[in-house]
Amino acid sequence: MDVSLTGFAPLGDRVWWARAEPASVTVGLVAGGTGCLVVDTGSCPSQGRAIRAAAEATAGVPVVAAVVTHHHYDHLFGLAAFADVATYGHRSIPGSVLRHAGLARELAEMGLSRADLARPGRAFRRRAALDLGGRPVGITHLGPAHTPGDSVVIVPDADLVFAGDLVEEAGPPSIELDTSLPGWLRALDRLLRRCGPATTVVPGHGRPVDRAFVAAQRAWLAAAAP
Image (spheres, one colour):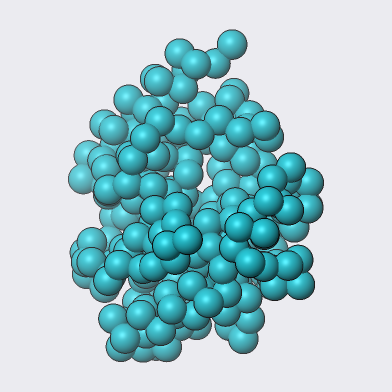
C-alpha cells in the first residue's frame, strides 16, 4: 500500500496544504509566531510522524497542536504521533471510531491494532480556540453531517477554512451509514454564512475551492436528500 506524503504547498501567509496517500487526504498546516497546527493526521502513526516532521521543516516552528476534522481513518489514525502536544477533535469521535463497521478492515489494511489508535486529548462539543503566537485559530463543530463529529478549522486572518470532508473536490461527497443529509445541508449553510467571496475553502480531498463551489455542492446534496 502506498503510504506517502507530498510536500506542503503554500495557500497563503504561513498556511500550507499537502496530500497524504493512500486516501489522497488533505493535510493542513497553519503557523504562528511560536508554533504550528496540523489539520488531520494521516492514516497511521508512521505517516503522522512524517507529517509532523514535514510540518516543522516547512513552518520553521514546532508543532504545538493537531486537530482531526472527523473520525475516518485517513484523518485520524496518525494522531498517536502527536501525543505530546494538544490534540483537538469533537467529543463524538471515540465512540464513532468504535462503532464504525469498517474499523477491523481498516486496521488490518494499515497493519495496525486498536492499541495504535489515539483519541483527541481536548474533546469539545461546539468549538475550541487556540493561539499559535499572535495568530488565533478557531475550531467549530457545525453539527452532525458527513459524520456525527465534523469540524472545520478557521484561520480568520488568512480568510481560509479547512473544511474536512464536509466539502469534497476530488469526487462527489461521500454519504456514509452515519451521515445525516439534513444535518449536512445545515452545516454547509452555516459554513456558507462564514464565507465571503474571497474565502478559500480547503476540502478533505482535492484542491482548494471557493464559496461558489461550496454552494454548488450544497445544491448537489440537496438533490440527493430524500
